[in-house]
Length: 370
Image (cartoon, rainbow, N blue to C red; front, side, top):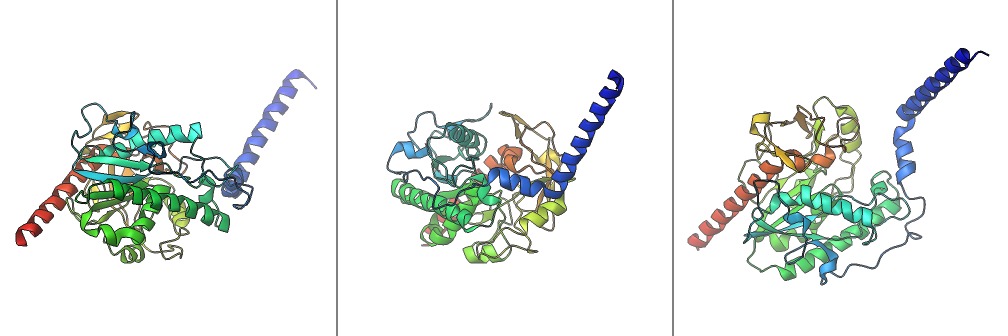
């Protein structure tokens, strides 16, 4: 065989392998990801770190008095409030990606680096008016969301138990007259919703708003279970905001099919129920053009008027134009999940301030009436 023919055969084999891999990915991509990311051991056999002691500073990623607090970061032109008027209990998204155990240790360097980055680019939106408390928890690994096994449920239950204990420590530390905001993203938003259902009655009069971002809130099942409605107006207090960001030209049918399998607070799959969609550019639902975007984070710099957004009938937040240069973590199908906060950072910051002002005005009016 001549060198030229060997070369052509090599090219043909490479092309065939690429096509085969593409076909396998299309037919079984979900199963391949599940195998690669889901722990191969049972929850019972999974190593667990000791429960965090939330009386110790080391058990918090962010809290008042903590040196090098990542949530007190702000982009150029913004600063954290010197005298915050409210307190945010923020629960982090999934940062633990390993498959060797079901729940994160507290001393994993890679996980902790991701958590600090999430605090800078997400929780920092609240530091204009609020002191921020972010607990370190034994969060469930990413693979917990790729399977419906009882082991995954146990991993999530363990992470939630840490969240609830941290919240008790937070309440014990914050003055009793301080308004409270609950917030989180992804796994953190899921825990926030369960926390609201379990403890919402004890803080109802102090609750400014709930930002359950990057996790579906089923309508009306979840809002009924929580006894709290979705926000319907900018500057409204005592309501829930939730959104999930997708490119308007993304694989929306696949997105809706995947979200239909997520369980609502009732424990049943969401199915065809609509999801709560709060447009950060309007403070309610509806649509807004890029001109309404006061600043999206591209890296650690704000760029205004780059991204518009609209809620669709199913409850997805569709962004248009979908930026290709916002960062390396846009997921397949046009899923901008990682950037749910960053896409609207400046608007979220203004939204928090407006809802706190509305809460304060309502409390003042109630006091005057008494």
